[in-house]
Amino acid sequence: MPHSERTTSSSWALAIVQALELSGLDGRALFVELGVDPGLLNDPDARIAQDQMTRLWQLAVERSGDPAIGLNMAQVIRPAHFNVVGFALMSSRTLKDGFARIVRYQRLIGEAADLALEVHPDCYRLVMSIHGDRLPAPAQSHDAAMAYALAFCRWMTGRVLMPLEAHFAYPAPAELSAYQALFGCPLVFGAPSYSLSFSRSMMEEPLATGNETLAQLHDQLAADYLMRFERDRVTHQARQVLCRLLPQGEPKREAVASALRMSTRTLQRRLQDENTSYQALLDETRRELALQYLGQRQLTLLEIAYLLGFADPSNFFRAFKRWFGIPPGQYRERQLARRPMVNNEEDR
Image (cartoon, rainbow, N blue to C red; front, side):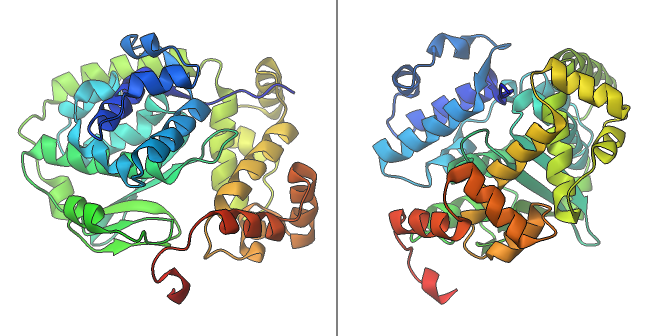
């Protein structure tokens, strides 16, 4: 069945283009090279295919030779990059409230991202997961999101705030200076997820720009926009639920329908309207997550099988061979053979 592709807002894509320009690249020219109309960047309501954004990052790294180029996003802060959500953020009472709004309206910025704001006894943790579409999300997209989130905190407070920790799911790069200069905190590589941890006092401190009346007005605008946007995007919402439920075992369609507050029959009909089915969506989600997990060297094949909801690892091996024609172990070996080993990686 046809695949319902994920998209990124043109406002966020414009921020990426501006970040690439800091490294001397012509982002609009790269879009042309990828077959994307750069004129879309001037239309705040336009959407750009997520896979095209992935290819943009890949081409940018190739041309610049800088795998940390995503960190440039910290230097291009503008509320408009968040579309209508940016104005709601500006009027938030605290950074905690602002992050909660980003989580709530994230799909307007980019459908490929899952965000969660975790509350811990000593901190708040913003956990990020960018799933990509047919192509696995590049490390640079995570770097960009984390860099932008931190820079926005600093812009909102007018202070050079430091996270408690920054976690990255990929192995430590050979050169860490750009990460150390930007984040200024302990860096953890090879982590289970991408996240930034902030002190509770920092997140709960009132902001000078906070305005509850304006925040509610902007919330209404963002909610209306989100309602129009999501009217035909049940596929994306169901995929997000699957990503959350898969580590607990293969999700039943009844559980997904319940999470989306609709009947199983309604879910089936809405997915059919978007040219897919529950089984096809489950298969696609497992397929793309498998590629991302195989890129994380600290995960064993057994762990990946369980993260994908397979009770029997042999079912994962059979499914992977059906998807890609080779066993997952062989696929990982080929991918690792193409990627140079970073310094001291073999010691971890």
